[in-house]
Length: 218
Image: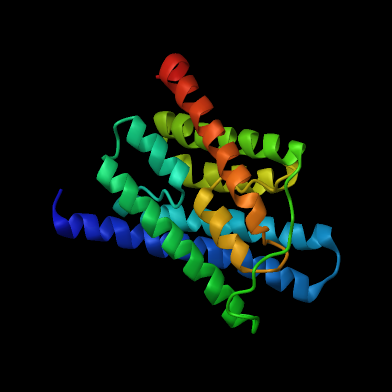
């Protein structure tokens, strides 16, 4: 692969994940600023994420595939669609972009640049929820992509928007998002103590999808 092509991919993954976290955390903060009704805050947060993620996937898909998520890059690697080097660099850029997005969200809403979240989320049900959420996300990407690639962006956006509501974890389903959201003690934050279990759940979901895709749908 040409160096310039790789640079474009890495920049796209960085800036795309940056805006994804800016949307997720920023809309959560805005919702909290406008109302104390948690249902309304979640509605605002899920709607903004659905719309924003859809646009981001449309924008960057031609350049990097719009992964914005280490488990997406990982499953693309094991399916032979991404090299190991690309996957490692993608993950680094996704985490970097995600952290930057949260920091900027804190700044533009006049909060502490970094405020470690005290929002403890983990329960047995939430752990299972993250497995299910990740399975649903990756199945959407792979199976819709196999049939009509042009519909992946809206399908993923719609799935995440819905999963905010039907999963008890509000569907993080993304290790970079999970890590980054520890840095904002707001509605969308997550306690650092929950990060490793959440990521383990996400990779269990990824393994399930890999096996399903490899032995059922491929």
